[in-house]
Amino acid sequence: MISVSDQQMEGAGTMPAPGSPPPAVSIRNLDRTFTRDGNTIQALSGVSLDVAPGEFVVLLGPSGCGKSTLLNIIAGLLPPTSGTIEVASHAVTGVPDEIGMMFQKPVLLPWRTVRDNIVLPIEMSKGRRAAKAAQGRVDELLDLVGLKSFGDQMPNELSGGMQQRAAICRMLINEPDILLLDEPFGALDEFTREHMNMQMLDLTHRLGRTAILVTHSISEAVFLADRIAVMCARPGRIMGIVDVDLPKDRTPDIATSPEFQHHVEAARDMLKRGHAMEMT
Ligand SMILES: Nc1ncnc2c1ncn2[C@@H]1O[C@H](COP(=O)(O)OP(=O)(O)OP(=O)(O)O)[C@@H](O)[C@H]1O
Image 1: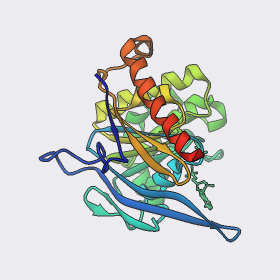
Image 2 (image 1 turned 120 degrees about the vertical axis):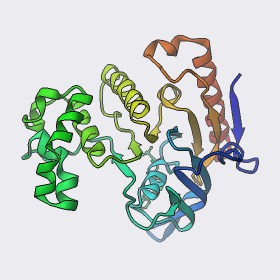
Image 3 (image 1 turned 180 degrees about the horizontal axis):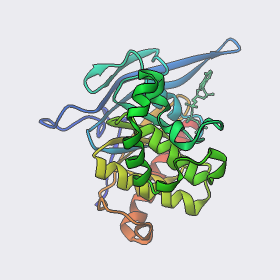
């Protein structure tokens, strides 16, 4: 039985159940507009969403529906035009300490070794001595993502998937509770992407992290998510939520199961309805 709730009906499915722990991320009535060439673009309108600690939420929607804008607002990189955003029960005013972020491109500095790229966030915030003291943690992280013997290599000696794994280590070096993932594996080939998704799922469960991931891919969303927030454009908003009640331990084989396909259909139907609303 698939649980689907429509946000058009009073934000159903986006709020916590009574008595549940405070959300890791809480968004209320968020709007964001941009001005371009004298025109106002409503990138987000009336977005409300709570993400529970340890939950994996996927933002799924077509190009331009405001997924990256929403992620950047949660990360404190962009202010909302109106509405509220809290991370760990605190209003977001800058980049919260709890947040780690990853983008489609790994953006490793080519003149620094993998290890020196990973400690960069510490070096920038706490200085070189602190970065040096974190080398043990770097080794643990490299081991965690299967790059144990690659710490002293230069980024150009690594494949695209390996570079993204180094970027995962850099995201985790400050031990963030909440991971914001903007199509982190979108530039990788399908096989590597599948492998990296499995690794990310395993990591978030093992480390007990909260994750919010952006994707256009319905099957990727169903594979990764505890809940999918389906978005539509013009203006960007959350159409509704698909609860993915599949077992937490997932391997690519699950994609052939009827349950998986039912969730894919539920998300696709919601996307189609969003598209139809955009056209009217
Ligand atoms: N800095 C900006 N200035 C003007 N318009 C912007 C800016 N950033 C985003 N937009 C507009 O806001 C809307 C949402 O953009 P956003 O990048 O968040 O969408 P998206 O769903 O992440 O798209 P994609 O999947 O293609 O990355 C788009 O119409 C985009 O053109």
